[in-house]
Length: 523
Image (cartoon, rainbow, N blue to C red; front, side):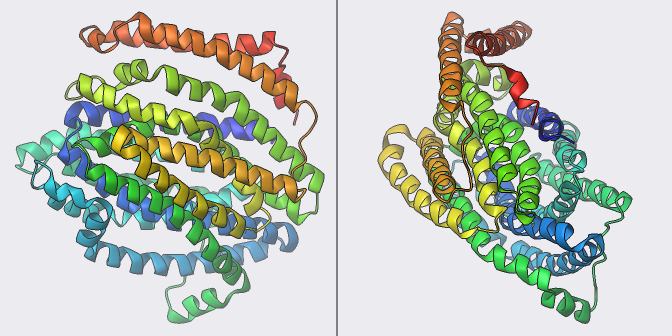
């Protein structure tokens, strides 16, 4: 499978996940709006997600996939299966302990994440967040085992199942909001609690599907239940290598999650709805990040690790060059759209039911903040695997720590002026700094050698992006998008037509400037 085909497969399936995720957010926004209780749910959902990113897609994946790929290349499938068994045994027992502690410590976790919930006009917001955190915390166990399964499947180049299973979480939450919330209301239970049930159901479904895929691959892990099996798993050389790599990776991911925790804490002390405005903007920002950055990172990580294990420096550099060109080609127009077309996007997607015109404006400010740093956010997803594939996790960690300090200094300056929008803006600017630093590091060590034609390529895409910006600024000002709420189908049709026209303008202008897209298909 070519890199482009693999990345396209992951990207298309991720698109399905993001579309259903957007439908989930639209339904939640229309049903619950942006209130103290939606802030409570978003805080409660962020807590297991924070730990999931620490243990699953973050530190664990960064450490596990390079070791797994190296063992597979150098020692064969039998040794690889043994490694999977022992890592799964250790991971399962650690997750059991963490889940129990998390359920018991939920009040402390909510207070650490968003102490400001105590002062909101809905006095039960804090208590509601604690209840939902307790219900959802075991979600981390499901998703961490999903991360292990995804690492194995991606190493065997089975990219489809890991990319598609997040759809199941979104479908479970959609059903919870659509059917569960009204049912809870008839029972006298707070309707938003149904969302927490949907999260747990989605986690179980994702794990079940991934395990079926592993079984078909004959890589189903055998989890040891005896103390001797745990000791053997812990003492295994491969497990120890994963744990040693996880230590700096955990610090690096902790830095990113600490930034999220600080920002959520700050937002909880701003106007009610601030946490939700940021969450709704994040959902739109995640579209290009997932379709481009995550898809490329998922595909490149095991391939870069295999190239390193085989000593193929030329292939390693060429794959990075290919990934970075795709990032610039596709992330730049997305950033332009977030900066110039935020109000139409938010209006057309969210402005229904309990979601007000003020919510549109506040969410659009956050979305514009993300637009400033979108290119950096996506580029980091490609550049960081360049380090992880070499089993160098310390360098990205050191960079992340400095960027965290820089981001919070920006918050001190910007939050008093820009309120919640400053939180998205500061992370975006920090991501640009992070990406540039990672790029310079790869260039200095000689791991990445840019291929010819970058100067002309940048001129081509910049010219096309400038033309796109002019068109989108006109389109944003030509209609009063919030007032079109009374004509929802007209607004949706207009939005779809303008987005399609924008894509055609950008791609057409790029082609007219001399860019030929075949160069991305040949690798």
